[in-house]
Length: 129
Image 1 (cartoon, rainbow, N blue to C red):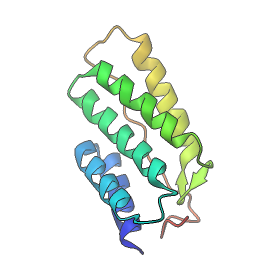
Image 2 (image 1 turned 90 degrees about the vertical axis):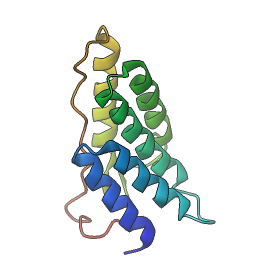
Image 3 (image 1 turned 60 degrees about the vertical axis):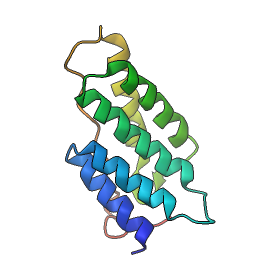
Image 4 (image 1 turned 90 degrees about the horizontal axis):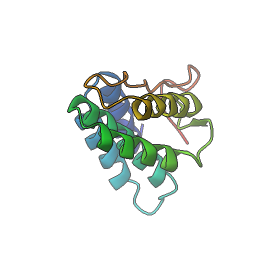
C-alpha cells in the first residue's frame, strides 16, 4: 500500500469515528504526497472539505458547514461512482441529503449526523485507482 493510500485509509477511519479534524489532516497528507500525479487532487480536496464541514457542525458553525459541504460536492462531482475503492456515489448522495437538511433547518444546534465513507467489499483491502 502506498503512502497516499495509507493516509487515505486513515482519513476514512478517522472520518467514520467522528474525528473530523484528524480526517482532514490525513486527506491533506495524501494530497501532499501526490507529487506530479495530481489527477486525484480534487478527490482528496473534496474529502478534506467534507471533513472540515463535519468538524464545523460539531462546533455548531452551520453556515460554515453548509459552505464546506457545497465545496466538497463540487470537488467530488467529476469522479466515478467508485473511486479508489470508495463508494463515492453513496457518499455524495449522503452529503447532498445532509446539505439539504442543514439548509432547511433554522440553524438549530443539532445538525444531521455525518455520512459514512465506505469501501466496496471487493476493494476493501487496498484502495487503488
